[in-house]
Image (cartoon, rainbow, N blue to C red; front, side, top):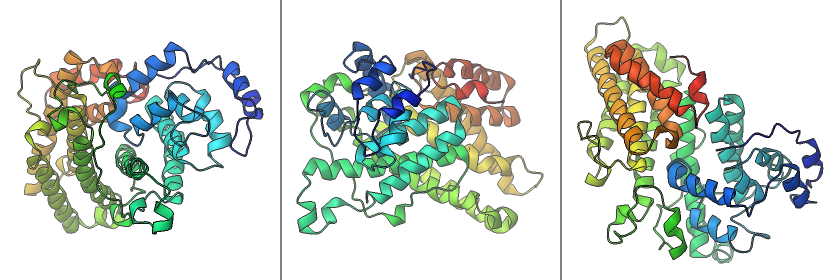
Length: 405
Protein backbone atom coordinates (compact mmCIF):
# COMPACT_ATOMS: atom_id res chain seq x y z
CA UNK A 1 0.00 0.00 0.00
CA UNK A 2 2.95 2.32 0.63
CA UNK A 3 5.90 2.94 -1.65
CA UNK A 4 9.45 3.31 -0.37
CA UNK A 5 11.71 5.21 -2.73
CA UNK A 6 14.64 5.09 -0.32
CA UNK A 7 15.32 8.78 -0.79
CA UNK A 8 16.52 11.28 1.78
CA UNK A 9 13.75 13.59 2.96
CA UNK A 10 16.13 16.38 3.98
CA UNK A 11 15.78 18.39 0.77
CA UNK A 12 12.01 17.98 0.77
CA UNK A 13 11.75 19.04 4.39
CA UNK A 14 13.77 22.16 3.72
CA UNK A 15 11.11 23.25 1.27
CA UNK A 16 8.36 23.10 3.87
CA UNK A 17 7.45 25.92 6.17
CA UNK A 18 7.21 25.47 9.93
CA UNK A 19 4.19 27.76 9.76
CA UNK A 20 2.22 24.87 8.27
CA UNK A 21 2.20 25.97 4.64
CA UNK A 22 4.21 24.62 1.77
CA UNK A 23 6.89 26.94 0.44
CA UNK A 24 7.10 24.83 -2.66
CA UNK A 25 4.63 21.96 -2.71
CA UNK A 26 5.46 21.23 -6.32
CA UNK A 27 9.09 20.68 -5.36
CA UNK A 28 8.12 18.20 -2.65
CA UNK A 29 5.94 16.25 -5.05
CA UNK A 30 8.67 16.26 -7.68
CA UNK A 31 11.28 15.15 -5.14
CA UNK A 32 9.25 12.03 -4.40
CA UNK A 33 8.09 11.66 -8.01
CA UNK A 34 4.41 12.05 -7.11
CA UNK A 35 1.53 13.23 -9.25
CA UNK A 36 -1.49 13.53 -6.96
CA UNK A 37 -3.78 13.58 -9.99
CA UNK A 38 -2.36 10.32 -11.31
CA UNK A 39 -4.69 7.35 -11.70
CA UNK A 40 -2.45 5.41 -9.30
CA UNK A 41 -3.45 7.73 -6.46
CA UNK A 42 -7.11 7.20 -7.27
CA UNK A 43 -6.66 3.44 -7.41
CA UNK A 44 -4.93 3.44 -4.01
CA UNK A 45 -7.72 5.53 -2.49
CA UNK A 46 -10.38 3.20 -3.90
CA UNK A 47 -8.58 0.17 -2.43
CA UNK A 48 -8.14 1.94 0.89
CA UNK A 49 -11.80 2.84 1.33
CA UNK A 50 -13.05 -0.50 0.04
CA UNK A 51 -10.85 -2.75 2.15
CA UNK A 52 -9.31 -0.88 5.09
CA UNK A 53 -11.95 1.67 6.02
CA UNK A 54 -13.43 -0.40 8.85
CA UNK A 55 -10.30 0.34 10.95
CA UNK A 56 -9.90 3.93 9.69
CA UNK A 57 -13.31 5.43 10.42
CA UNK A 58 -11.64 8.45 12.00
CA UNK A 59 -11.52 9.72 8.40
CA UNK A 60 -14.81 11.11 7.13
CA UNK A 61 -14.70 9.60 3.66
CA UNK A 62 -17.38 11.82 2.10
CA UNK A 63 -15.83 15.13 3.21
CA UNK A 64 -12.32 14.01 2.26
CA UNK A 65 -13.35 12.97 -1.24
CA UNK A 66 -15.43 16.10 -1.77
CA UNK A 67 -12.42 18.27 -0.98
CA UNK A 68 -10.00 16.01 -2.87
CA UNK A 69 -11.99 16.44 -6.06
CA UNK A 70 -13.02 19.99 -5.27
CA UNK A 71 -11.14 22.97 -3.88
CA UNK A 72 -8.08 21.66 -2.04
CA UNK A 73 -6.68 25.04 -1.09
CA UNK A 74 -7.28 25.81 2.62
CA UNK A 75 -9.49 22.72 2.93
CA UNK A 76 -10.54 21.60 6.41
CA UNK A 77 -10.92 17.96 5.43
CA UNK A 78 -8.11 17.38 2.93
CA UNK A 79 -4.37 17.92 3.12
CA UNK A 80 -1.40 16.70 1.11
CA UNK A 81 -0.02 14.79 4.09
CA UNK A 82 -3.37 13.09 4.74
CA UNK A 83 -3.66 12.07 1.10
CA UNK A 84 -0.13 10.70 0.99
CA UNK A 85 -0.42 8.94 4.36
CA UNK A 86 -2.46 6.33 2.54
CA UNK A 87 -0.18 5.76 -0.38
CA UNK A 88 3.33 7.18 0.09
CA UNK A 89 6.17 7.54 2.56
CA UNK A 90 6.52 11.25 1.74
CA UNK A 91 3.64 11.85 4.17
CA UNK A 92 5.87 11.38 7.20
CA UNK A 93 8.33 14.12 6.26
CA UNK A 94 5.50 16.55 5.54
CA UNK A 95 3.61 15.65 8.72
CA UNK A 96 6.61 16.06 11.01
CA UNK A 97 7.46 19.51 9.65
CA UNK A 98 3.99 20.99 9.18
CA UNK A 99 1.27 19.00 10.97
CA UNK A 100 3.09 18.52 14.26
CA UNK A 101 3.24 22.25 14.94
CA UNK A 102 -0.12 23.06 13.37
CA UNK A 103 -2.83 20.89 14.97
CA UNK A 104 -5.82 20.35 12.71
CA UNK A 105 -8.44 17.82 11.70
CA UNK A 106 -6.27 16.43 8.92
CA UNK A 107 -3.16 16.40 11.13
CA UNK A 108 -4.89 14.07 13.61
CA UNK A 109 -5.99 11.82 10.78
CA UNK A 110 -2.55 11.85 9.16
CA UNK A 111 -0.66 10.82 12.30
CA UNK A 112 -3.14 8.03 13.01
CA UNK A 113 -2.80 6.72 9.44
CA UNK A 114 0.98 6.79 9.87
CA UNK A 115 0.64 4.97 13.19
CA UNK A 116 -1.28 2.09 11.63
CA UNK A 117 1.16 1.93 8.74
CA UNK A 118 4.22 1.76 11.02
CA UNK A 119 2.63 -0.86 13.26
CA UNK A 120 1.67 -2.84 10.16
CA UNK A 121 5.26 -2.88 8.85
CA UNK A 122 6.71 -3.75 12.24
CA UNK A 123 7.97 -0.31 13.35
CA UNK A 124 6.14 -0.68 16.63
CA UNK A 125 7.78 2.07 18.66
CA UNK A 126 7.23 4.63 15.93
CA UNK A 127 3.65 3.49 15.49
CA UNK A 128 2.97 3.81 19.20
CA UNK A 129 4.51 7.30 19.19
CA UNK A 130 2.49 8.48 16.19
CA UNK A 131 -0.75 7.20 17.70
CA UNK A 132 0.05 9.08 20.90
CA UNK A 133 0.57 12.28 18.92
CA UNK A 134 -2.76 11.78 17.16
CA UNK A 135 -4.73 11.13 20.35
CA UNK A 136 -3.17 14.00 22.29
CA UNK A 137 -3.68 16.36 19.37
CA UNK A 138 -7.34 15.30 19.16
CA UNK A 139 -7.75 16.10 22.85
CA UNK A 140 -5.92 19.41 22.40
CA UNK A 141 -8.41 20.31 19.66
CA UNK A 142 -11.29 19.41 21.95
CA UNK A 143 -12.75 16.50 19.98
CA UNK A 144 -13.81 14.86 23.25
CA UNK A 145 -16.33 17.70 23.65
CA UNK A 146 -19.37 17.53 21.38
CA UNK A 147 -19.43 20.73 19.31
CA UNK A 148 -23.24 20.90 19.47
CA UNK A 149 -22.88 21.42 23.22
CA UNK A 150 -20.64 24.43 22.76
CA UNK A 151 -21.94 27.95 23.55
CA UNK A 152 -24.21 29.32 20.83
CA UNK A 153 -21.63 31.84 19.54
CA UNK A 154 -19.04 29.09 19.09
CA UNK A 155 -21.10 26.30 17.57
CA UNK A 156 -22.73 28.61 15.04
CA UNK A 157 -19.58 28.38 12.91
CA UNK A 158 -20.14 24.67 12.34
CA UNK A 159 -22.62 23.02 10.00
CA UNK A 160 -24.41 19.77 10.76
CA UNK A 161 -21.74 18.00 8.72
CA UNK A 162 -19.00 19.68 10.79
CA UNK A 163 -20.60 18.45 14.02
CA UNK A 164 -20.87 14.94 12.67
CA UNK A 165 -17.33 14.97 11.33
CA UNK A 166 -15.93 15.91 14.73
CA UNK A 167 -17.92 13.06 16.30
CA UNK A 168 -16.63 10.65 13.69
CA UNK A 169 -13.04 11.69 14.35
CA UNK A 170 -13.44 11.28 18.10
CA UNK A 171 -15.14 7.88 17.93
CA UNK A 172 -12.69 6.76 15.26
CA UNK A 173 -9.80 7.75 17.53
CA UNK A 174 -11.50 6.05 20.47
CA UNK A 175 -11.76 2.78 18.52
CA UNK A 176 -8.21 3.03 17.17
CA UNK A 177 -6.91 3.58 20.69
CA UNK A 178 -8.47 0.32 21.87
CA UNK A 179 -7.18 -1.68 18.92
CA UNK A 180 -3.64 -0.31 19.23
CA UNK A 181 -3.63 -0.76 23.02
CA UNK A 182 -4.83 -4.35 22.60
CA UNK A 183 -2.02 -5.11 20.15
CA UNK A 184 0.57 -3.61 22.52
CA UNK A 185 -1.06 -4.86 25.73
CA UNK A 186 -0.98 -1.38 27.24
CA UNK A 187 -3.50 0.91 28.95
CA UNK A 188 -5.73 3.03 26.77
CA UNK A 189 -5.23 6.78 26.29
CA UNK A 190 -8.81 7.82 25.50
CA UNK A 191 -11.39 6.97 28.15
CA UNK A 192 -15.12 6.80 27.56
CA UNK A 193 -15.90 8.59 30.82
CA UNK A 194 -13.76 11.58 29.84
CA UNK A 195 -15.79 12.50 26.75
CA UNK A 196 -19.21 13.98 26.13
CA UNK A 197 -19.57 13.11 22.46
CA UNK A 198 -23.02 12.16 21.23
CA UNK A 199 -23.74 8.98 19.24
CA UNK A 200 -23.13 9.07 15.52
CA UNK A 201 -25.86 9.97 13.06
CA UNK A 202 -26.21 8.82 9.48
CA UNK A 203 -25.99 11.45 6.77
CA UNK A 204 -27.27 10.63 3.26
CA UNK A 205 -24.59 9.38 0.88
CA UNK A 206 -24.04 11.67 -2.10
CA UNK A 207 -24.17 9.86 -5.47
CA UNK A 208 -20.42 10.08 -6.05
CA UNK A 209 -19.75 7.87 -3.01
CA UNK A 210 -21.17 4.66 -4.55
CA UNK A 211 -17.89 3.47 -6.17
CA UNK A 212 -16.01 4.12 -2.92
CA UNK A 213 -18.17 2.08 -0.59
CA UNK A 214 -16.71 -0.67 1.51
CA UNK A 215 -16.73 -4.13 -0.05
CA UNK A 216 -19.86 -5.99 0.96
CA UNK A 217 -22.19 -3.02 0.78
CA UNK A 218 -25.08 -3.59 -1.63
CA UNK A 219 -25.68 -0.38 -3.55
CA UNK A 220 -29.09 -1.61 -4.71
CA UNK A 221 -30.39 -2.36 -1.22
CA UNK A 222 -31.13 1.24 -0.30
CA UNK A 223 -33.84 0.21 2.16
CA UNK A 224 -31.48 -1.91 4.24
CA UNK A 225 -29.73 0.30 6.78
CA UNK A 226 -26.77 -2.01 7.28
CA UNK A 227 -26.12 -2.18 3.54
CA UNK A 228 -25.78 1.56 2.99
CA UNK A 229 -24.08 2.87 6.12
CA UNK A 230 -20.98 2.26 8.23
CA UNK A 231 -22.71 3.62 11.33
CA UNK A 232 -24.23 0.33 12.60
CA UNK A 233 -20.81 -1.33 12.44
CA UNK A 234 -19.11 1.59 14.16
CA UNK A 235 -21.69 1.60 16.96
CA UNK A 236 -21.10 -2.11 17.60
CA UNK A 237 -17.35 -1.47 17.65
CA UNK A 238 -17.89 1.27 20.23
CA UNK A 239 -19.87 -1.09 22.49
CA UNK A 240 -17.11 -3.69 22.26
CA UNK A 241 -14.38 -1.08 22.73
CA UNK A 242 -15.92 -0.01 26.03
CA UNK A 243 -15.42 -3.56 27.33
CA UNK A 244 -11.87 -3.61 25.95
CA UNK A 245 -11.14 -0.34 27.75
CA UNK A 246 -11.98 -1.89 31.09
CA UNK A 247 -10.21 -5.12 30.21
CA UNK A 248 -6.95 -3.40 29.25
CA UNK A 249 -7.04 -1.27 32.40
CA UNK A 250 -7.40 -4.33 34.61
CA UNK A 251 -4.88 -6.49 32.75
CA UNK A 252 -2.21 -3.79 32.94
CA UNK A 253 -2.66 -3.32 36.68
CA UNK A 254 0.15 -4.93 38.68
CA UNK A 255 -2.02 -5.26 41.78
CA UNK A 256 -4.63 -7.26 39.86
CA UNK A 257 -2.00 -9.63 38.50
CA UNK A 258 -0.63 -10.31 41.98
CA UNK A 259 -3.90 -10.76 43.89
CA UNK A 260 -5.51 -13.97 42.62
CA UNK A 261 -9.06 -13.52 43.97
CA UNK A 262 -9.76 -10.09 42.41
CA UNK A 263 -8.08 -11.33 39.24
CA UNK A 264 -10.55 -14.22 38.94
CA UNK A 265 -13.48 -11.96 39.72
CA UNK A 266 -12.36 -9.54 37.02
CA UNK A 267 -11.87 -12.41 34.58
CA UNK A 268 -15.41 -13.66 35.17
CA UNK A 269 -16.87 -10.17 34.91
CA UNK A 270 -15.07 -9.32 31.67
CA UNK A 271 -15.91 -12.66 30.08
CA UNK A 272 -19.55 -12.06 30.96
CA UNK A 273 -19.47 -8.58 29.41
CA UNK A 274 -17.85 -9.88 26.23
CA UNK A 275 -20.37 -12.69 25.87
CA UNK A 276 -23.26 -10.32 26.54
CA UNK A 277 -22.00 -8.11 23.73
CA UNK A 278 -21.91 -11.16 21.45
CA UNK A 279 -25.40 -12.29 22.44
CA UNK A 280 -26.78 -8.81 21.92
CA UNK A 281 -25.67 -8.58 18.28
CA UNK A 282 -28.41 -8.12 15.71
CA UNK A 283 -28.82 -10.79 13.04
CA UNK A 284 -26.98 -8.67 10.45
CA UNK A 285 -23.87 -8.57 12.66
CA UNK A 286 -23.78 -12.22 13.70
CA UNK A 287 -21.27 -14.83 12.58
CA UNK A 288 -21.66 -18.61 12.73
CA UNK A 289 -18.53 -20.67 12.68
CA UNK A 290 -20.22 -23.53 10.85
CA UNK A 291 -21.54 -21.44 7.96
CA UNK A 292 -20.68 -22.80 4.52
CA UNK A 293 -17.51 -21.44 2.93
CA UNK A 294 -19.28 -19.47 0.22
CA UNK A 295 -21.79 -17.73 2.47
CA UNK A 296 -20.95 -14.01 2.02
CA UNK A 297 -18.73 -12.60 4.77
CA UNK A 298 -18.63 -8.82 4.88
CA UNK A 299 -15.19 -7.45 5.84
CA UNK A 300 -16.88 -5.22 8.45
CA UNK A 301 -18.43 -8.27 10.11
CA UNK A 302 -15.13 -10.13 9.94
CA UNK A 303 -13.32 -7.23 11.63
CA UNK A 304 -15.88 -7.13 14.45
CA UNK A 305 -15.56 -10.82 15.24
CA UNK A 306 -11.80 -10.92 14.84
CA UNK A 307 -11.55 -8.19 17.48
CA UNK A 308 -13.98 -9.97 19.80
CA UNK A 309 -12.26 -13.36 19.56
CA UNK A 310 -8.79 -11.85 19.86
CA UNK A 311 -9.87 -10.18 23.09
CA UNK A 312 -11.26 -13.46 24.42
CA UNK A 313 -7.91 -15.22 23.95
CA UNK A 314 -5.87 -12.29 25.29
CA UNK A 315 -8.09 -12.20 28.38
CA UNK A 316 -8.13 -15.92 29.12
CA UNK A 317 -4.84 -17.37 27.89
CA UNK A 318 -2.78 -16.90 31.06
CA UNK A 319 -5.48 -18.47 33.23
CA UNK A 320 -5.96 -21.30 30.73
CA UNK A 321 -2.25 -22.20 30.78
CA UNK A 322 -1.72 -21.73 34.52
CA UNK A 323 -0.77 -24.55 36.85
CA UNK A 324 -3.83 -23.85 38.96
CA UNK A 325 -6.58 -26.48 39.22
CA UNK A 326 -9.41 -24.01 39.83
CA UNK A 327 -12.59 -24.41 37.76
CA UNK A 328 -11.92 -21.05 36.10
CA UNK A 329 -9.00 -22.68 34.26
CA UNK A 330 -11.41 -25.01 32.45
CA UNK A 331 -13.67 -22.13 31.44
CA UNK A 332 -10.67 -20.07 30.27
CA UNK A 333 -9.43 -22.97 28.14
CA UNK A 334 -12.86 -23.41 26.56
CA UNK A 335 -13.00 -19.69 25.78
CA UNK A 336 -9.59 -19.79 24.07
CA UNK A 337 -10.42 -22.94 22.10
CA UNK A 338 -13.71 -21.59 20.78
CA UNK A 339 -12.18 -18.21 19.93
CA UNK A 340 -9.32 -19.84 18.01
CA UNK A 341 -11.79 -21.97 16.04
CA UNK A 342 -13.83 -18.90 15.11
CA UNK A 343 -10.74 -16.95 14.02
CA UNK A 344 -9.66 -19.91 11.89
CA UNK A 345 -13.10 -20.05 10.27
CA UNK A 346 -13.14 -16.29 9.59
CA UNK A 347 -9.64 -16.41 8.14
CA UNK A 348 -10.51 -19.30 5.78
CA UNK A 349 -13.72 -17.67 4.56
CA UNK A 350 -12.05 -14.28 4.15
CA UNK A 351 -9.24 -15.87 2.14
CA UNK A 352 -11.72 -17.78 -0.03
CA UNK A 353 -13.98 -14.78 -0.74
CA UNK A 354 -11.68 -11.76 -0.66
CA UNK A 355 -8.06 -12.87 -0.45
CA UNK A 356 -5.92 -12.29 2.63
CA UNK A 357 -4.04 -9.45 0.94
CA UNK A 358 -7.15 -7.35 1.59
CA UNK A 359 -7.26 -8.16 5.30
CA UNK A 360 -7.48 -5.46 7.97
CA UNK A 361 -4.62 -5.20 10.47
CA UNK A 362 -6.71 -6.91 13.15
CA UNK A 363 -6.43 -10.12 11.11
CA UNK A 364 -2.70 -10.31 11.88
CA UNK A 365 -3.22 -9.91 15.61
CA UNK A 366 -6.16 -12.34 15.62
CA UNK A 367 -4.21 -15.05 13.80
CA UNK A 368 -1.30 -14.67 16.22
CA UNK A 369 -3.65 -15.13 19.17
CA UNK A 370 -5.35 -18.09 17.49
CA UNK A 371 -2.03 -19.80 16.74
CA UNK A 372 -0.88 -19.74 20.35
CA UNK A 373 -4.28 -20.99 21.53
CA UNK A 374 -4.33 -23.75 18.91
CA UNK A 375 -0.82 -24.87 19.81
CA UNK A 376 -1.77 -25.03 23.48
CA UNK A 377 -5.26 -26.53 23.27
CA UNK A 378 -6.21 -27.27 19.67
CA UNK A 379 -4.90 -29.42 16.84
CA UNK A 380 -1.59 -29.25 15.02
CA UNK A 381 -3.43 -29.02 11.70
CA UNK A 382 -5.35 -25.93 12.83
CA UNK A 383 -2.19 -24.33 14.18
CA UNK A 384 -0.32 -25.04 10.91
CA UNK A 385 -3.11 -23.62 8.72
CA UNK A 386 -3.17 -20.46 10.79
CA UNK A 387 0.62 -20.13 10.77
CA UNK A 388 0.75 -20.61 6.99
CA UNK A 389 -1.70 -17.72 6.53
CA UNK A 390 0.82 -15.30 8.02
CA UNK A 391 2.93 -15.42 4.85
CA UNK A 392 -0.08 -14.26 2.82
CA UNK A 393 -0.87 -11.52 5.32
CA UNK A 394 2.73 -10.29 5.14
CA UNK A 395 2.16 -9.12 1.55
CA UNK A 396 0.02 -6.30 2.96
CA UNK A 397 1.21 -6.17 6.56
CA UNK A 398 4.98 -6.96 6.80
CA UNK A 399 4.55 -7.19 10.59
CA UNK A 400 3.19 -10.70 9.98
CA UNK A 401 6.57 -11.91 8.70
CA UNK A 402 8.39 -10.72 11.82
CA UNK A 403 6.14 -12.47 14.35
CA UNK A 404 7.59 -15.61 15.96
CA UNK A 405 4.90 -18.26 16.20
